[in-house]
Amino acid sequence: MNYFSPYNRYLFNLIATQSYSNQPAVSSTAIVQINLQNYNVHAPIFVPTNPTFYISETATVGTLFGTVYATDADNDGIIYSISSSQFSIDSSTGVLQLQQTFQSSSASQYLVTVTASDDGTSCLPSFPLCPRFSTTTTITINVTAVNKMSPQFLNQICGSTVSFYEGNAIGSNITSITAYDSDRGQNGQITISFPSEQSRTTGKIQDYFEKFSFESSVFREWNEKYRIFAILYSTSTTSEYNSNGVFTNEYYI
Image 1 (spheres, rainbow, N blue to C red):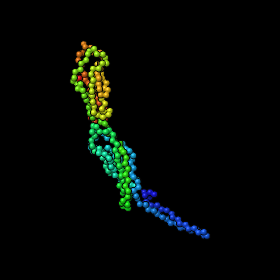
Image 2: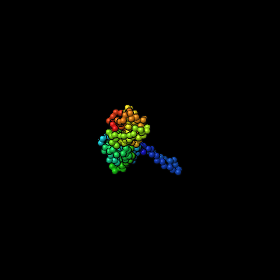
Image 3: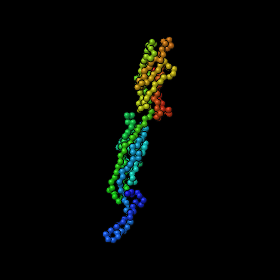
Image 4: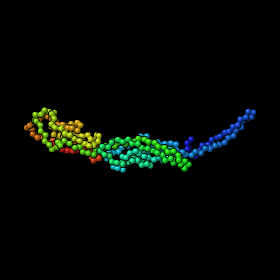
């Protein structure tokens, strides 16, 4: 039976029959109406079951970033709650909100338990003590990385003097550079480049360590000193400070 059928009632034909061994049976028919009273028999259901949400790592406290939704077949009201200090949820609407800013060491993904509880209004006023039901689900909150920091040289190579023998063979190492970018993931990847006029030096970054090597033989008569201009690039499509997502630092050595 369904309380939400038309008029909350069911009609039946009730037939009573009496039989005799030596005479015809007799019967009587009556129409019976059964009126239903609503009762809380269903638990809330999340739609979808395990939703996923996204929020920027630079989001400020109070940022709204998604809504959890649940239904109840008894037409009860839904009360939402969340098991997290990093995030909060509006108990009536299911809207998610950031409670604490993300630190540099914060996780890039959070698995958070959300509970939907019915308020039992389907029983009122006939059954004020009817049961209540709750359903829990795990939501995924992904923190999207933002390119917000410029790369830095770490080994004080900038402005220093590097010496080498003019007879060094092509491909021999001159010195090494250590560079660092505190952004997460792809935003922390670094590329070191040199202007075209410094074509006699080249470098490829490997695990943030750069080694200069000769691209061609060095002739003493051509020049005894080189002023090398190095540029660090940190490239991403999620920059908050640059429309093309590129941060640079420029140094002379």
